[in-house]
Amino acid sequence: MKKPIIVLGIGELGSVFSRAFLKNNYPVYPITRQTNINELANTINPELVLICTAEDDLQNALHSTPDKWKDRITMIQNELLPRDWQTHNFIDPTVISVWFEKKKGIDPKVLISSPIYGKKAKILIDSLALINIPSHIINSEEELLFELVLKNLYILTTNIVGLVIESDANINDLRNKHSSLMSNVSNDIIAIQTKLTGKTFDKKKLEQGIIKIFESDLEHNCMGRFALTRLKRTLKLAKKFNLSVPALKKIANEHV
View 1 (spheres, rainbow, N blue to C red):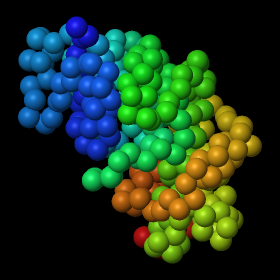
View 2 (view 1 turned 30 degrees about the vertical axis):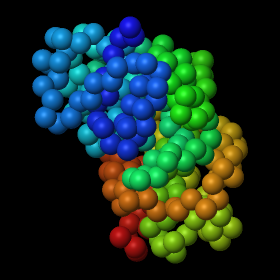
View 3 (view 1 turned 180 degrees about the vertical axis):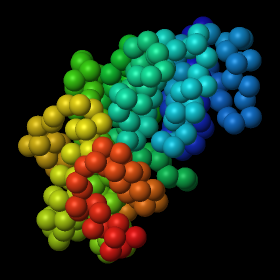
C-alpha cells in the first residue's frame, strides 16, 4: 500500500490535488485549522506534504511544519519565491507553478501545462494526469525561478491593471486596449521581482511566456478577488526596497 499524502488546506485547489492523489491510490489526510499537526506527525509517515494555503497563510503553515516532514514539502502558492521557504530549513522542496484554476462548483480549467520542480514531481504529474490536468518536469532551480517569476508577473499585472480598467475587462481587452498601461505595470513588477530574487530576467522571454498564457484564455477576467490585496502587498515590498514604481503608485493614488 502506498504511503499517505498530507494536504494542508482543503480549499478549491486542495480538493483538486486530493482527488488526483486518491485516483492514484494514495490515502489522503487533510489538515484543517482544527487539526493537531504535531499529534498527526507522530502517527503518520507521509509520502509528501502538500501546502495548499493562501499566500497570506503560507508562512504560518511553513513554520508549523513538523521537523520530521521537512524533507517532503510541496508548495503551490501564487506569488511564491525561494525566499518564502529558504528560512525554514526544508530539504529539497517540490514546487509546482499551477496553471489551472478551480472555482466552486466548476471543473478545473487548464490554461497551460503546469511546470514542477523537485523530487516529488513525478507523483504530482502522474496523479494530475489521472484527472486530465497536464504538467511537466523542469530540471533546474534556475528554470523554477523563471517559472515562478513568470507566474507572479502574470497574476500581479493582470490583477492590478484590472483594478483601473473596465470591471468586466478580460485578457483580450487588456492586450488590445491597455497595452501601454500593462507594459508600465509589468516593468514595475519585474523590478520588484528582481530585487526579491537578486536575479535579473530576460524580459523578452518573459514577454513570450505571457503571450503564450494570454493566448490560452483570452476571455479570462483581469481583476481577481484579491487584486487590491496584491497591489497593497506589492507596494509594501517596493517601499521596503526603496524602489521607484510609478505605475503602481499612480494606480494606488488615483483609483484605490
